[in-house]
Image 1 (cartoon, one colour):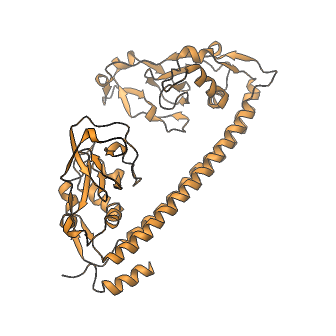
Image 2 (cartoon, one colour):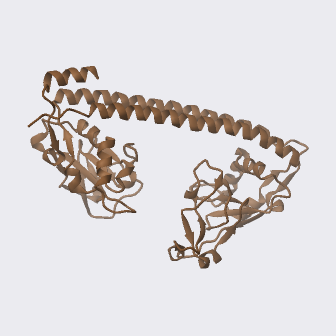
Image 3 (cartoon, helix red, strand yellow):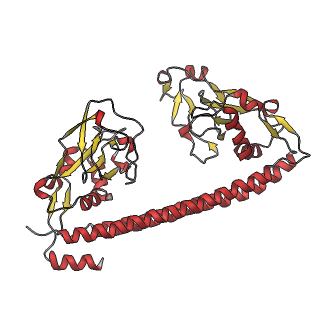
Length: 405
Protein backbone atom coordinates (compact mmCIF):
# COMPACT_ATOMS: atom_id res chain seq x y z
CA UNK A 1 0.00 0.00 0.00
CA UNK A 2 2.83 2.42 0.84
CA UNK A 3 4.37 1.97 -2.62
CA UNK A 4 1.00 2.70 -4.28
CA UNK A 5 0.56 5.79 -2.10
CA UNK A 6 4.02 7.01 -3.03
CA UNK A 7 3.32 6.57 -6.74
CA UNK A 8 -0.01 8.40 -6.49
CA UNK A 9 1.60 11.22 -4.54
CA UNK A 10 4.32 11.58 -7.18
CA UNK A 11 2.32 10.89 -10.35
CA UNK A 12 -1.21 12.05 -9.49
CA UNK A 13 -0.88 14.60 -6.68
CA UNK A 14 -4.17 16.31 -7.63
CA UNK A 15 -6.23 13.13 -7.87
CA UNK A 16 -6.87 10.35 -10.38
CA UNK A 17 -8.85 10.75 -13.58
CA UNK A 18 -12.17 8.86 -13.67
CA UNK A 19 -13.99 8.00 -16.88
CA UNK A 20 -17.10 6.10 -17.83
CA UNK A 21 -16.18 2.65 -19.10
CA UNK A 22 -17.58 3.38 -22.56
CA UNK A 23 -14.96 6.12 -23.08
CA UNK A 24 -12.08 3.64 -22.86
CA UNK A 25 -13.64 0.31 -23.83
CA UNK A 26 -16.35 -1.21 -26.00
CA UNK A 27 -18.05 -4.53 -26.60
CA UNK A 28 -16.46 -6.83 -29.14
CA UNK A 29 -18.07 -6.39 -32.54
CA UNK A 30 -16.10 -9.14 -34.30
CA UNK A 31 -17.52 -12.57 -35.07
CA UNK A 32 -16.20 -16.13 -35.24
CA UNK A 33 -17.61 -19.30 -36.82
CA UNK A 34 -18.80 -21.77 -34.19
CA UNK A 35 -17.17 -24.66 -36.06
CA UNK A 36 -13.77 -23.06 -35.41
CA UNK A 37 -14.21 -23.43 -31.65
CA UNK A 38 -13.50 -26.26 -29.23
CA UNK A 39 -14.27 -26.78 -25.50
CA UNK A 40 -11.19 -24.77 -24.49
CA UNK A 41 -12.07 -21.55 -26.30
CA UNK A 42 -15.86 -21.46 -26.33
CA UNK A 43 -17.22 -19.47 -23.40
CA UNK A 44 -20.86 -19.87 -22.44
CA UNK A 45 -22.31 -18.47 -19.25
CA UNK A 46 -22.36 -22.02 -17.81
CA UNK A 47 -18.61 -22.51 -17.95
CA UNK A 48 -17.81 -19.16 -16.35
CA UNK A 49 -17.38 -19.91 -12.65
CA UNK A 50 -19.19 -17.87 -9.97
CA UNK A 51 -17.46 -15.63 -7.43
CA UNK A 52 -14.72 -14.57 -9.84
CA UNK A 53 -13.53 -18.15 -10.22
CA UNK A 54 -12.45 -17.82 -13.86
CA UNK A 55 -13.68 -20.46 -16.30
CA UNK A 56 -13.80 -24.17 -17.03
CA UNK A 57 -13.64 -25.81 -20.42
CA UNK A 58 -17.09 -26.04 -21.97
CA UNK A 59 -19.02 -29.31 -21.76
CA UNK A 60 -21.00 -28.48 -24.87
CA UNK A 61 -20.48 -26.56 -28.11
CA UNK A 62 -23.00 -24.11 -29.55
CA UNK A 63 -25.21 -24.95 -32.52
CA UNK A 64 -25.27 -21.31 -33.63
CA UNK A 65 -23.30 -20.53 -36.77
CA UNK A 66 -21.76 -17.20 -35.74
CA UNK A 67 -20.69 -16.08 -32.27
CA UNK A 68 -19.11 -13.03 -30.70
CA UNK A 69 -15.34 -13.29 -30.92
CA UNK A 70 -13.13 -12.45 -27.98
CA UNK A 71 -9.37 -11.98 -27.92
CA UNK A 72 -6.51 -12.11 -25.45
CA UNK A 73 -6.96 -9.25 -22.96
CA UNK A 74 -10.76 -8.96 -23.22
CA UNK A 75 -12.73 -9.02 -19.97
CA UNK A 76 -15.58 -11.54 -20.24
CA UNK A 77 -18.65 -11.03 -18.05
CA UNK A 78 -21.52 -13.41 -17.45
CA UNK A 79 -24.52 -11.20 -18.20
CA UNK A 80 -27.22 -13.39 -16.60
CA UNK A 81 -27.68 -13.09 -12.83
CA UNK A 82 -24.88 -10.57 -12.20
CA UNK A 83 -24.93 -11.45 -8.48
CA UNK A 84 -23.10 -14.68 -9.41
CA UNK A 85 -20.02 -12.52 -10.18
CA UNK A 86 -18.85 -14.41 -13.26
CA UNK A 87 -15.82 -12.74 -14.83
CA UNK A 88 -12.68 -13.88 -16.64
CA UNK A 89 -9.69 -12.12 -18.21
CA UNK A 90 -9.17 -13.85 -21.55
CA UNK A 91 -5.70 -15.28 -22.13
CA UNK A 92 -6.50 -16.55 -25.63
CA UNK A 93 -8.86 -15.93 -28.53
CA UNK A 94 -12.17 -17.66 -28.98
CA UNK A 95 -15.92 -17.16 -29.13
CA UNK A 96 -18.65 -16.56 -26.57
CA UNK A 97 -22.40 -16.89 -26.40
CA UNK A 98 -24.86 -14.00 -26.29
CA UNK A 99 -25.10 -14.35 -22.50
CA UNK A 100 -21.44 -13.36 -22.16
CA UNK A 101 -20.13 -9.84 -22.77
CA UNK A 102 -16.63 -9.39 -24.18
CA UNK A 103 -15.34 -5.98 -23.07
CA UNK A 104 -12.34 -4.74 -25.02
CA UNK A 105 -10.14 -1.71 -24.42
CA UNK A 106 -10.37 0.49 -27.50
CA UNK A 107 -7.23 0.92 -29.60
CA UNK A 108 -6.81 4.61 -28.78
CA UNK A 109 -6.80 3.89 -25.02
CA UNK A 110 -4.52 0.84 -24.95
CA UNK A 111 -1.71 3.06 -23.71
CA UNK A 112 -3.85 4.50 -20.90
CA UNK A 113 -5.22 1.39 -19.19
CA UNK A 114 -4.05 -2.21 -18.95
CA UNK A 115 -6.37 -5.22 -19.38
CA UNK A 116 -5.23 -6.61 -16.02
CA UNK A 117 -6.18 -3.41 -14.17
CA UNK A 118 -9.53 -3.21 -15.96
CA UNK A 119 -10.20 -6.84 -15.00
CA UNK A 120 -9.68 -6.07 -11.31
CA UNK A 121 -11.92 -3.01 -11.51
CA UNK A 122 -14.69 -5.05 -13.18
CA UNK A 123 -14.32 -7.89 -10.67
CA UNK A 124 -14.77 -5.58 -7.70
CA UNK A 125 -17.82 -5.94 -5.50
CA UNK A 126 -18.60 -2.30 -6.21
CA UNK A 127 -18.99 -3.02 -9.91
CA UNK A 128 -21.14 -6.10 -9.37
CA UNK A 129 -23.40 -4.20 -6.97
CA UNK A 130 -23.79 -1.48 -9.64
CA UNK A 131 -24.42 -4.08 -12.33
CA UNK A 132 -27.08 -5.82 -10.26
CA UNK A 133 -28.75 -2.50 -9.40
CA UNK A 134 -29.22 -1.76 -13.10
CA UNK A 135 -30.10 -5.32 -14.17
CA UNK A 136 -33.50 -6.06 -15.70
CA UNK A 137 -35.77 -8.97 -14.81
CA UNK A 138 -36.81 -10.55 -11.52
CA UNK A 139 -36.34 -14.32 -11.79
CA UNK A 140 -33.46 -14.18 -14.26
CA UNK A 141 -31.92 -10.69 -14.05
CA UNK A 142 -29.76 -9.61 -16.97
CA UNK A 143 -27.16 -6.86 -16.85
CA UNK A 144 -27.84 -3.70 -18.83
CA UNK A 145 -25.20 -3.33 -21.52
CA UNK A 146 -25.64 0.44 -21.63
CA UNK A 147 -25.47 0.80 -17.84
CA UNK A 148 -22.26 -1.23 -17.78
CA UNK A 149 -20.67 1.16 -20.27
CA UNK A 150 -21.79 4.06 -18.05
CA UNK A 151 -19.96 2.67 -15.01
CA UNK A 152 -17.28 5.11 -13.84
CA UNK A 153 -13.81 3.65 -13.44
CA UNK A 154 -10.54 5.14 -12.17
CA UNK A 155 -7.73 5.49 -14.69
CA UNK A 156 -4.58 6.11 -12.64
CA UNK A 157 -1.13 6.38 -14.25
CA UNK A 158 0.17 3.14 -15.73
CA UNK A 159 2.84 2.72 -13.04
CA UNK A 160 0.12 2.82 -10.40
CA UNK A 161 -2.00 0.32 -12.33
CA UNK A 162 0.90 -2.11 -12.68
CA UNK A 163 1.77 -1.90 -8.97
CA UNK A 164 -1.86 -2.52 -7.98
CA UNK A 165 -2.08 -5.49 -10.37
CA UNK A 166 1.14 -6.91 -8.89
CA UNK A 167 -0.25 -6.66 -5.35
CA UNK A 168 -3.65 -8.11 -6.26
CA UNK A 169 -2.03 -10.95 -8.21
CA UNK A 170 -0.10 -11.81 -5.05
CA UNK A 171 -3.29 -11.67 -2.97
CA UNK A 172 -5.04 -13.95 -5.47
CA UNK A 173 -2.18 -16.46 -5.39
CA UNK A 174 -2.10 -16.47 -1.58
CA UNK A 175 -5.86 -16.95 -1.45
CA UNK A 176 -5.65 -19.91 -3.87
CA UNK A 177 -2.85 -21.50 -1.83
CA UNK A 178 -4.79 -21.04 1.40
CA UNK A 179 -7.93 -22.55 -0.11
CA UNK A 180 -5.93 -25.55 -1.36
CA UNK A 181 -4.40 -26.07 2.11
CA UNK A 182 -7.77 -25.87 3.85
CA UNK A 183 -9.41 -28.22 1.36
CA UNK A 184 -6.54 -30.71 1.77
CA UNK A 185 -6.91 -30.59 5.55
CA UNK A 186 -10.65 -31.10 5.32
CA UNK A 187 -10.26 -33.99 2.88
CA UNK A 188 -7.74 -35.65 5.22
CA UNK A 189 -10.24 -35.41 8.09
CA UNK A 190 -12.96 -36.92 5.88
CA UNK A 191 -10.73 -39.83 4.89
CA UNK A 192 -9.89 -40.39 8.54
CA UNK A 193 -13.61 -40.38 9.34
CA UNK A 194 -14.39 -42.89 6.58
CA UNK A 195 -11.64 -45.21 7.80
CA UNK A 196 -12.93 -44.98 11.38
CA UNK A 197 -16.51 -45.56 10.24
CA UNK A 198 -15.41 -48.58 8.21
CA UNK A 199 -13.81 -50.17 11.27
CA UNK A 200 -16.91 -49.62 13.40
CA UNK A 201 -19.26 -50.90 10.70
CA UNK A 202 -17.14 -53.91 9.80
CA UNK A 203 -19.09 -57.09 10.20
CA UNK A 204 -17.73 -59.37 12.92
CA UNK A 205 -17.90 -63.14 12.50
CA UNK A 206 -20.80 -63.48 14.90
CA UNK A 207 -22.90 -60.79 13.19
CA UNK A 208 -25.46 -62.22 10.74
CA UNK A 209 -25.75 -60.88 7.21
CA UNK A 210 -29.04 -60.41 5.44
CA UNK A 211 -30.30 -59.44 2.01
CA UNK A 212 -31.32 -55.79 2.26
CA UNK A 213 -34.61 -56.52 0.51
CA UNK A 214 -35.54 -59.09 3.19
CA UNK A 215 -35.52 -56.49 5.98
CA UNK A 216 -36.74 -53.35 4.15
CA UNK A 217 -39.13 -52.29 1.41
CA UNK A 218 -37.16 -50.87 -1.55
CA UNK A 219 -39.00 -49.39 -4.52
CA UNK A 220 -38.25 -47.05 -7.39
CA UNK A 221 -39.68 -43.56 -7.69
CA UNK A 222 -41.96 -42.56 -10.54
CA UNK A 223 -42.18 -39.46 -12.73
CA UNK A 224 -45.37 -37.95 -14.12
CA UNK A 225 -44.63 -36.82 -17.66
CA UNK A 226 -44.22 -34.22 -18.92
CA UNK A 227 -43.25 -33.00 -15.47
CA UNK A 228 -43.71 -29.33 -16.46
CA UNK A 229 -47.42 -30.04 -16.75
CA UNK A 230 -47.66 -31.00 -13.07
CA UNK A 231 -45.33 -28.48 -11.38
CA UNK A 232 -47.42 -25.92 -9.50
CA UNK A 233 -47.32 -22.93 -7.18
CA UNK A 234 -50.85 -23.67 -6.01
CA UNK A 235 -51.82 -24.17 -2.37
CA UNK A 236 -52.75 -27.80 -3.06
CA UNK A 237 -49.27 -28.64 -4.38
CA UNK A 238 -47.19 -31.29 -2.59
CA UNK A 239 -43.36 -31.40 -2.19
CA UNK A 240 -41.50 -32.72 -5.25
CA UNK A 241 -38.10 -34.02 -4.11
CA UNK A 242 -35.13 -33.48 -6.42
CA UNK A 243 -31.40 -34.01 -5.96
CA UNK A 244 -30.82 -30.26 -5.76
CA UNK A 245 -32.98 -30.06 -2.63
CA UNK A 246 -30.23 -31.52 -0.45
CA UNK A 247 -26.62 -30.35 -0.12
CA UNK A 248 -23.96 -32.72 -1.45
CA UNK A 249 -22.90 -33.79 2.04
CA UNK A 250 -26.25 -33.27 3.71
CA UNK A 251 -28.22 -35.92 5.59
CA UNK A 252 -31.83 -34.77 5.68
CA UNK A 253 -34.41 -33.63 3.16
CA UNK A 254 -36.29 -30.81 4.88
CA UNK A 255 -37.78 -28.80 2.03
CA UNK A 256 -38.20 -28.77 -1.73
CA UNK A 257 -37.87 -26.03 -4.31
CA UNK A 258 -40.84 -27.30 -6.32
CA UNK A 259 -44.26 -28.78 -5.72
CA UNK A 260 -46.47 -30.92 -7.94
CA UNK A 261 -50.22 -31.11 -8.29
CA UNK A 262 -52.19 -33.92 -6.62
CA UNK A 263 -52.61 -35.40 -10.13
CA UNK A 264 -48.83 -35.45 -10.54
CA UNK A 265 -48.39 -36.97 -7.08
CA UNK A 266 -50.77 -39.79 -8.01
CA UNK A 267 -48.36 -40.75 -10.82
CA UNK A 268 -45.32 -40.55 -8.55
CA UNK A 269 -44.00 -42.34 -5.43
CA UNK A 270 -44.71 -41.10 -1.92
CA UNK A 271 -42.11 -40.96 0.85
CA UNK A 272 -42.94 -40.24 4.47
CA UNK A 273 -40.89 -38.70 7.28
CA UNK A 274 -38.25 -41.22 8.33
CA UNK A 275 -38.10 -42.97 4.95
CA UNK A 276 -34.78 -43.10 3.12
CA UNK A 277 -34.22 -42.08 -0.47
CA UNK A 278 -31.23 -43.34 -2.42
CA UNK A 279 -30.01 -41.44 -5.45
CA UNK A 280 -29.30 -42.95 -8.83
CA UNK A 281 -28.14 -39.80 -10.54
CA UNK A 282 -25.63 -37.06 -9.73
CA UNK A 283 -24.65 -38.31 -6.25
CA UNK A 284 -24.87 -41.99 -7.17
CA UNK A 285 -25.84 -44.31 -4.30
CA UNK A 286 -25.99 -41.53 -1.73
CA UNK A 287 -28.60 -42.02 1.04
CA UNK A 288 -30.73 -39.24 2.51
CA UNK A 289 -33.41 -39.30 5.20
CA UNK A 290 -36.66 -37.51 4.47
CA UNK A 291 -38.09 -35.31 7.19
CA UNK A 292 -41.07 -34.36 5.07
CA UNK A 293 -44.00 -35.97 3.33
CA UNK A 294 -43.17 -35.75 -0.38
CA UNK A 295 -42.92 -37.49 -3.74
CA UNK A 296 -39.90 -38.77 -5.69
CA UNK A 297 -39.14 -39.22 -9.38
CA UNK A 298 -37.60 -42.29 -11.00
CA UNK A 299 -34.06 -41.08 -10.31
CA UNK A 300 -34.60 -42.04 -6.66
CA UNK A 301 -35.20 -45.28 -4.76
CA UNK A 302 -37.36 -45.20 -1.63
CA UNK A 303 -36.43 -47.34 1.39
CA UNK A 304 -38.97 -47.89 4.16
CA UNK A 305 -40.27 -50.43 6.72
CA UNK A 306 -36.77 -51.21 8.04
CA UNK A 307 -37.43 -50.13 11.64
CA UNK A 308 -37.86 -53.67 12.96
CA UNK A 309 -34.28 -54.47 12.00
CA UNK A 310 -32.37 -51.19 11.93
CA UNK A 311 -31.88 -48.04 13.94
CA UNK A 312 -32.34 -45.28 11.37
CA UNK A 313 -29.02 -43.52 12.01
CA UNK A 314 -27.13 -46.81 11.94
CA UNK A 315 -28.64 -47.67 8.55
CA UNK A 316 -27.67 -44.21 7.29
CA UNK A 317 -24.03 -44.71 8.31
CA UNK A 318 -24.06 -48.26 6.92
CA UNK A 319 -25.35 -47.21 3.49
CA UNK A 320 -22.73 -44.45 3.32
CA UNK A 321 -19.90 -46.82 4.28
CA UNK A 322 -17.27 -47.61 1.65
CA UNK A 323 -17.97 -51.39 1.43
CA UNK A 324 -21.66 -50.85 0.67
CA UNK A 325 -20.96 -47.98 -1.74
CA UNK A 326 -18.38 -50.10 -3.57
CA UNK A 327 -20.86 -52.98 -3.78
CA UNK A 328 -23.50 -50.67 -5.23
CA UNK A 329 -21.02 -49.43 -7.83
CA UNK A 330 -19.83 -52.95 -8.72
CA UNK A 331 -23.34 -54.29 -9.23
CA UNK A 332 -24.53 -51.19 -11.09
CA UNK A 333 -22.08 -51.90 -13.89
CA UNK A 334 -19.03 -50.33 -15.49
CA UNK A 335 -18.92 -47.26 -17.67
CA UNK A 336 -20.24 -43.76 -17.22
CA UNK A 337 -23.92 -44.78 -17.11
CA UNK A 338 -24.69 -46.83 -14.01
CA UNK A 339 -28.06 -48.30 -13.16
CA UNK A 340 -28.65 -48.70 -9.43
CA UNK A 341 -32.11 -50.21 -9.63
CA UNK A 342 -34.30 -51.51 -6.82
CA UNK A 343 -33.46 -55.16 -7.57
CA UNK A 344 -29.74 -54.50 -7.14
CA UNK A 345 -30.19 -52.71 -3.81
CA UNK A 346 -32.53 -55.45 -2.54
CA UNK A 347 -29.92 -58.10 -3.38
CA UNK A 348 -26.99 -56.52 -1.51
CA UNK A 349 -26.05 -58.34 1.70
CA UNK A 350 -25.50 -56.15 4.75
CA UNK A 351 -24.62 -56.89 8.39
CA UNK A 352 -27.43 -56.93 10.94
CA UNK A 353 -26.01 -56.44 14.47
CA UNK A 354 -28.22 -56.15 17.51
CA UNK A 355 -29.94 -52.82 18.03
CA UNK A 356 -27.87 -52.32 21.18
CA UNK A 357 -24.70 -52.61 19.11
CA UNK A 358 -26.18 -50.32 16.46
CA UNK A 359 -26.87 -47.66 19.08
CA UNK A 360 -23.27 -47.89 20.34
CA UNK A 361 -21.87 -47.46 16.83
CA UNK A 362 -24.18 -44.49 16.16
CA UNK A 363 -23.06 -42.76 19.36
CA UNK A 364 -19.39 -43.08 18.40
CA UNK A 365 -19.90 -42.05 14.77
CA UNK A 366 -22.08 -39.10 15.75
CA UNK A 367 -19.23 -37.75 17.88
CA UNK A 368 -16.70 -38.18 15.10
CA UNK A 369 -19.13 -36.78 12.51
CA UNK A 370 -19.66 -33.71 14.70
CA UNK A 371 -15.90 -33.19 14.86
CA UNK A 372 -15.56 -33.41 11.08
CA UNK A 373 -18.52 -31.05 10.60
CA UNK A 374 -17.02 -28.61 13.06
CA UNK A 375 -13.86 -28.59 10.96
CA UNK A 376 -15.96 -28.40 7.78
CA UNK A 377 -17.72 -25.32 9.11
CA UNK A 378 -14.62 -23.79 10.61
CA UNK A 379 -12.41 -24.00 7.54
CA UNK A 380 -14.86 -22.27 5.17
CA UNK A 381 -15.37 -19.62 7.86
CA UNK A 382 -11.63 -19.04 7.98
CA UNK A 383 -11.48 -18.90 4.20
CA UNK A 384 -14.42 -16.46 4.10
CA UNK A 385 -12.65 -14.22 6.61
CA UNK A 386 -9.53 -14.19 4.43
CA UNK A 387 -11.61 -13.39 1.36
CA UNK A 388 -13.30 -10.55 3.20
CA UNK A 389 -9.89 -9.22 4.13
CA UNK A 390 -8.81 -9.55 0.50
CA UNK A 391 -11.91 -7.71 -0.72
CA UNK A 392 -11.26 -4.92 1.78
CA UNK A 393 -7.70 -4.34 0.57
CA UNK A 394 -8.70 -4.64 -3.07
CA UNK A 395 -11.42 -2.01 -2.61
CA UNK A 396 -8.91 0.28 -0.93
CA UNK A 397 -6.43 -0.23 -3.75
CA UNK A 398 -9.08 0.55 -6.36
CA UNK A 399 -10.46 3.64 -4.62
CA UNK A 400 -8.90 6.97 -5.57
CA UNK A 401 -9.60 10.59 -4.94
CA UNK A 402 -10.98 11.90 -8.21
CA UNK A 403 -9.13 14.66 -9.95
CA UNK A 404 -11.10 17.89 -10.28
CA UNK A 405 -11.92 19.01 -13.79
